Amino acid sequence: MKFLNTQTKSISFASLILAGSYLLSAVLGVLRDHLLTGKLPTDKLDVYYAAFTIPDFIGLILIFGAIAAAIVPIFSSYLVNSEDQAWRYVNNLVNIFLTFLIIAAVILIIFAPFLVTLIAPGFSPEKRETTVMLMRIMFLSPIILGTSTIMSGILQVFHRFLVTALAPIAYNCGIIIGIIFFVPQFGLKGLAYGVVLGGILHMLIQIPAFLHSGFKYQLVFNIKDVGVQKTLKLMVPRSLGLGAGQFNTIVITAIASTLISGSIALFNLANTLSSLLVNAVAVSLSTAVFPAMSLAHSREDKKGFERRFSNAFGQIMFLSIPISIEIFLLRAQIARVVWGSGHFTWVDTRLAAACLGVFSIGLFAQGLIFLLSKTFYAVHNTKIPAWISFGTVVFNITISLWFIWLLRFSNIFSNFLHWVLKLQTISNISVVGLSLAFTITAFIESSLLLFFVIKKLQVFDVREVLKSVYKILIAGTAMGVVIFLVRQGLVTYNIFNLQTTLGVFLQLLLAGVLGIISYGAVAFMLGTSEIHMIRESFFGRFNKKL
Image 1 (tube, rainbow, N blue to C red):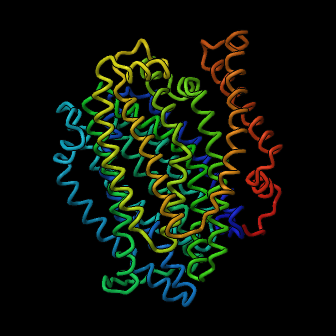
Image 2 (image 1 turned 90 degrees about the vertical axis):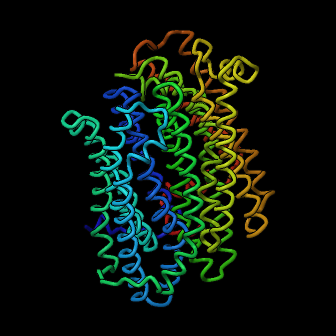
């Protein structure tokens, strides 16, 4: 109990805990996907991922947007004045959101067949029927995860980052249990049961710390409450922005369902793996710094706000760029180790590796989107991120369709992608076009958010950041050279048997570790400020404020 109630006293320590938990969660996510591809063919995984889209959509609109944009900042402002008012506000919100989530879930369960027709027009009648079944079970997930996510946001205000960091790990454990034990018993339904179990575990692990923080349930239901009205006012633009992003996922799923069988699974597997790795950096840092930025804004501490933002920005760039380089250069090895088993064919592996490589190019841009969006939320501005999200979704869908059309026949664009991604012997690579569109859109969205942060908030020293980025790119180049030489050297001298999974794993491990060491060494010699901040965190200076 005391362990789960641990409070974190500094942003450095908080981000370190969150990064560690996201990393462990990423490892479990990799294991989850390895088990999925080992036990199920990609056409059945298409059904699983398609069934996920609408439940995710509901959770994002009604809960996750509110947490990021409104609940944490408003609860923080209440807490400065009155703890009793703050907890009454939380009780009211929990009751209101739970009611709306249950009503929404019931309605959508009824209309699930119609929804599946919209999101997967390319599915056969049999696949649609199975998707409907899974989707109806998964509608329990946003209800459970919605409540749990509200708890996570409040616990982070009290600096209880450890227990909130363990929640995603518990969620992945639930899904893995479903794959190992439920799928053999119930078939594809077992995957849906595992998702629901993951949500339950996500919530259960946080309840003791939530109660210990001061929560006592109150039967309050007042939509006209000032705090609730302000929450709705702030969350609507954010929820619409998130809804636009999720609508983008729905459209991409619909498009992928019309491509070769397995395209939905290939896109999602590659996107999930790249997201897991960037989450270990970007989400942990932005989550840790968000409550501090919200409090700094409430106290009108502009210097403190700027310092926290700048440090988080630099660290995201410092950590995500080498991850991008590693994934791109070792994408084939990663794909073979993580997915290349069981029902996953050699063509599936190569296409998934290509998608992963394309996603990796935009990882730092995806990471910055988390921080830049939360920077606006901390100052109670949700409109700018929402409008940008809307615009980039339209752009993404447009160029996705264009890229798919271009990849249907031989031309300069398709030939270039075949050559760069080493897909010359595969005729249909349309799914790669979806990944490329996603990556280009991430660059545009992060650039627009950064432009408005500089213009509206003026909390960004461009010259200092450019100096830091210059050093990071030099270190990254050195890292890339080392990885390439080690990777090719192992092939040339046949040191490991690369026809086996173990041999490929050892190649991946050796090249990856030596690449990281070279990056850290060059960054240290260049005197990058980010490496000193990270070093201080590891050596225990957790009470020092950023």
